[in-house]
Image (cartoon, rainbow, N blue to C red; front, side):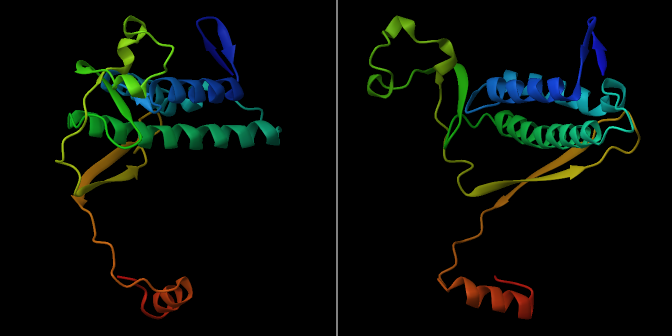
Length: 186
């Protein structure tokens, strides 16, 4: 358990807080600032996990939940690090994500809830569409464990050109056999 501000937290409570944090500040509508805050919180929790949560060694359920919490924190760390990298490129909103941008515009009237009046729109929904700069690139993220206990892990992020869609539209079984025989499908 963790004593934070006089309140004890269990691994389950910390896991629930992580879910709320990711959904609220790193979900489909987010800002560069919100994902940076999430990354700072997740990084701190991941680095301090042995000090934050204590587990009774005889409780398999608590040990299982501790591993679940560590995996969830690690996953969140990787994802928000990628989000921060994308936001740092000032790429704007695209696909399934809306990055709030105070200098941007609101969605077109037809895209909003019909009941909402123009003055009722939260500034959170102001955005700027991305340009085409990153369309031909894909982001690759590599996780690196911390070197020492108490240190946060690291991620290495790079961008590379997307591979072309193969013209060969073969059946799965044929591709799988070719992979087993040669070790590659490209």
